[in-house]
Length: 627
Ligand SMILES: *[C@@H]1O[C@H](CO)[C@@H](O)[C@H](O)[C@H]1NC(C)=O
Ligand SMILES: *[C@@H]1O[C@H](CO)[C@@H](O)[C@H](O)[C@H]1NC(C)=O
Ligand SMILES: *[C@@H]1O[C@H](CO)[C@@H](O)[C@H](O)[C@H]1NC(C)=O
Ligand SMILES: *[C@@H]1O[C@H](CO)[C@@H](O)[C@H](O)[C@H]1NC(C)=O
Ligand SMILES: *[C@@H]1O[C@H](CO)[C@@H](O)[C@H](O)[C@H]1NC(C)=O
Ligand SMILES: *[C@@H]1O[C@H](CO)[C@@H](O)[C@H](O)[C@H]1NC(C)=O
Ligand SMILES: *[C@@H]1O[C@H](CO)[C@@H](O)[C@H](O)[C@H]1NC(C)=O
Ligand SMILES: *[C@@H]1O[C@H](CO)[C@@H](O)[C@H](O)[C@H]1NC(C)=O
Ligand SMILES: *[C@@H]1O[C@H](CO)[C@@H](O)[C@H](O)[C@H]1NC(C)=O
Ligand SMILES: *[C@@H]1O[C@H](CO)[C@@H](O)[C@H](O)[C@H]1NC(C)=O
Ligand SMILES: *[C@@H]1O[C@H](CO)[C@@H](O)[C@H](O)[C@H]1NC(C)=O
Image (cartoon, rainbow, N blue to C red; front, top):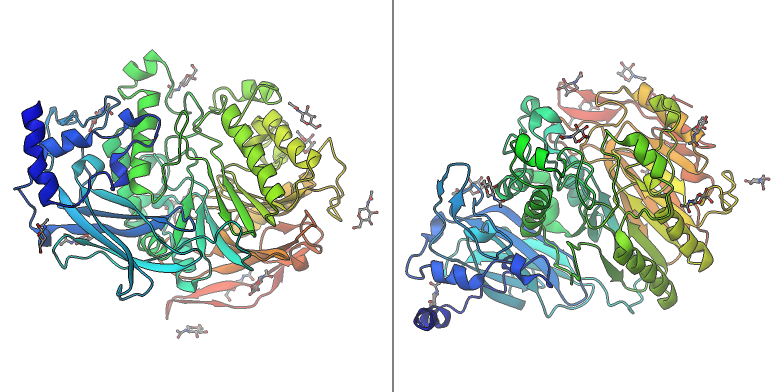
């Protein structure tokens, strides 16, 4: 043993590149280092004499950055000798077995480490470098590179680039931005908020548009960044040339890597990652449909499902595979984890905004609606013991809200995956008990504890965000049945919820629903729910939030078509929340929106037409009044 160790020393001294600086070798959990990759074993296996032809290496998926702090930010790229993803498995014993179970043989893994340099500078030419370094990557981490750029200044734009060591083979140039110091009194900040990007359902134009407009500082993703299904199960990828790989439901580490890699070929997504630092969290589909602490809808946590489905991957192992690939591919930090697979974390953006990103799915939530148990979940949805987050995360969440209020941050922004406000959809679904029990509606005790914490501590200026539903819901934040609420004036509300539509995932009331049918359903929903001030089902899209100390402006955008790559978008509706008001400014939406249904307001629809002769969209101004 000692001799072998000694023989490694020359490698360490010749190459000053670092293995451990590539964060992806580490465990996603700092308290479970064994979940990481044994760098010692990787170093032992790699042969420093055997090198790649540097020209044959390719930066296959652009660059990305994320989880900005005042002095540092995470940078990401992938540089590989192959376009395919690595089949190396990572197991809990902490090393990479080289056996490919698909092909019943030991697979070729790289014998050579790939050395990558990175530079961070204030200018696009990277002349005034403020940080740089050299790191290794290898097949063990799917050739991904994730480093923490340090020594940065708060609230500053930086450019960065990777290159293969000693070579002019370079990645694209990325741009990123640090956050202000928590105590800095910045006057404005803008966010774009996304969820539910489903590759076989359409092109990710929504991501590209924000890059083209250059309209925000940071990008928030509330999850469902990928979907686990086979194309035929959910999507029509063949018809638009977007069949996600591998073309089957995904279970293994290779599967999740390959799926993420497919999504990251979308040019608009690549461009968005290249221009903005992201703060993402997962929803359920990064792992599987309707996940909870111990299971998911389409994979039972039983011996039968393990053996008889022929999947051969247990629920826990599937989750681990998904989580490992997610951390490899997403530009996020591995926050300090005390237990479990923690992704929930928070960010201070000066004294203006405190952003709390929750995990209402995978970390520690009680059993959810798995389709075959809906009546049971309905029955227990008001049980006091149920939690969406688990007690550790719940307590952290309430503490975050209090601390943010006490330190005097103007706005508290809560990134939840699922919709917080009650949604009675009984007429639309024909089921009198129709709430979404997979959302906060299935966890009323957790919801009440949250509202109770806000009301009893007078915590104000709360802006809840949600994705997951593939539709837009704008509501006053209320505690129905407990606190009086006036839907006309908004009195009694303690904040606002902005829940956004999907980048491409289909309308929950029918993938090919007509505008008229969608707006009729929106009208029903709007009328059945007092606090629901605007609802739209028709448009795929996203929203932007523009914060100052005086107000928040929310702008919702809809994509007229996503079956082709195009830059067309329609401003759907605009909302304002004044500081201290804790409700939507009246008249809500200025009294007029483009689509859906607006309480006490009207929908004025600009007829949008594609001229097939010249391929451009134009507004034909029918100004059709729907309501
Ligand atoms: C590098 O990767 C890109 C993106 O996957 C691909 O389009 C290009 O053909 C690759 N280049 C080489 C030389 O393999
Ligand atoms: C390792 O990967 C293979 C397929 O590449 C898969 O069949 C096997 O279940 C994986 N093992 C684990 C522990 O994930
Ligand atoms: C890169 O070049 C430097 C000197 O120019 C040399 O010391 C170093 O070993 C080279 N590194 C690699 C990985 O080839
Ligand atoms: C899981 O178990 C339930 C209850 O037995 C059953 O209805 C459902 O079909 C099973 N799902 C799968 C994917 O095996
Ligand atoms: C939550 O609050 C509502 C309104 O007061 C009440 O009807 C419901 O029983 C409460 N549920 C729990 C579990 O606290
Ligand atoms: C609700 O607010 C409206 C003003 O928007 C007011 O006219 C009405 O009286 C209020 N209703 C109650 C019950 O206070
Ligand atoms: C819905 O539209 C898509 C894309 O245009 C098409 O591929 C699909 O067949 C349509 N589905 C139905 C049920 O009409
Ligand atoms: C939902 O709304 C319908 C129509 O307004 C009503 O009959 C039903 O009781 C409501 N259900 C719930 C759970 O509030
Ligand atoms: C929303 O605001 C934008 C400008 O910020 C404007 O172009 C658009 O017409 C507004 N949309 C609606 C529906 O009011
Ligand atoms: C929209 O415009 C097109 C072409 O100008 C027209 O055929 C269509 O009837 C209009 N639709 C509505 C709803 O006004
Ligand atoms: C395309 O045609 C429409 C009218 O059909 C016109 O309004 C628009 O300006 C044209 N665009 C271009 C780029 O020629």
